[in-house]
Length: 243
Image (tube, rainbow, N blue to C red; front, side):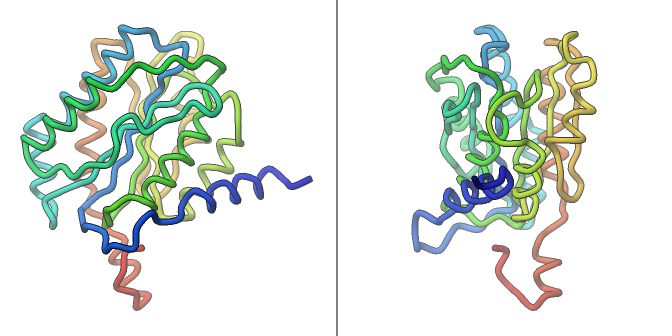
């Protein structure tokens, strides 16, 4: 029987083959939003989350951060997760460079069909899906980030820490947004220990619904304005390509 680390590594490798031989479009950042849509998130909270991401992306401060990058553009995708085999890319990868493209992506988030899939929090599966889509999309970012938000721990599927380590080893940073629930008072510590990783990774906590939108905005700005680039490391190694 194969060990869990080997199973995770095999799944990760199998998912990351590029879908096209075309030259990818360069952007400053590839940013995958991985968002909790499990049974603990009710209909109102789903709308709150989606609206929060749509509003944050269109916020003038975020647009200014995007415009301050060398390439003045990022690529984003919206991934939702619940139980095993339920993770999906609800809004596929899209380049965002101005108010119009940010608004268009936000409209796609709000228009996505609801997810109904009980059975726990398969966060590791969703992170693997996001990582695979980063490696297979039509963009080439100087940085690659997976942004996980949720109100509970990984409860089913691959081991989360092993998954995180495999994704970070592939050059992807994993950040977190914790939605506070009394049943998980130390969830931010769990995220730091088990889910997030990579250079400059961080966790932001939303204490309640009223602060959720502000937490998303702060997290998104922080992710976009982080000017660390894989080009620095790769240039020192004599490799001009960021992948």
